[in-house]
Image (spheres, rainbow, N blue to C red):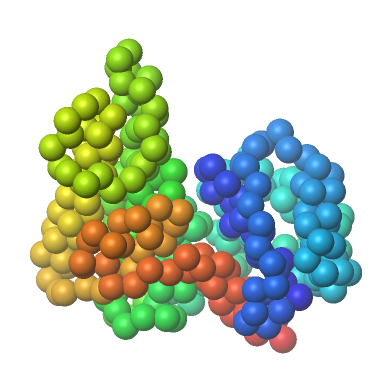
Length: 259
């Protein structure tokens, strides 16, 4: 079995693959101070509750955008699963795509992993929108190569900034308001955030397509993707497991190269 680890700025997702099947998936908050032993005790208990024997896990793959957690994630794999992990972005790790950027080393590992999975699953050229701590727009050409993209503040980050900077504006839940014109502070904030992001998505997709010179297939992933997929007709596919499938594909590509 394969342990796939997707470490973002807010959460770390752990998933166990048995072939193509996800046997279990769990989330933990990202924290540089969490040791390999803390994560190991937590994860092995969850594996046991799901009927998975940790000794059946013999391989691991990691993608992280938080360098500070990488050491402990590697230690977790080696100490608790006897697996030397494949790390996306490290020297010698094949992705099966080219990165057409001035500084390829600056691209977040999660964005490249999403590009791999999206190209394998959908006809492209593609735009992949990932609703995470940041909202990212990634452009993949018809051959699967990574062409760049755009990065906007994440929705939760924007809400928190609004609350922190304005004394009279409370924290509010993200949701689709019934009206654009809010009749009180909270509905007005919800409208501004939700419909503002709908406008941001539609505007950026339109400008990317115009610059790229082709109509593109739009794929959405990340925690808040379902909320916006309903209100943005241009989003053709909602894919919550995109990053995990990309990790599986990259691990297979590199395992095949070693065999």
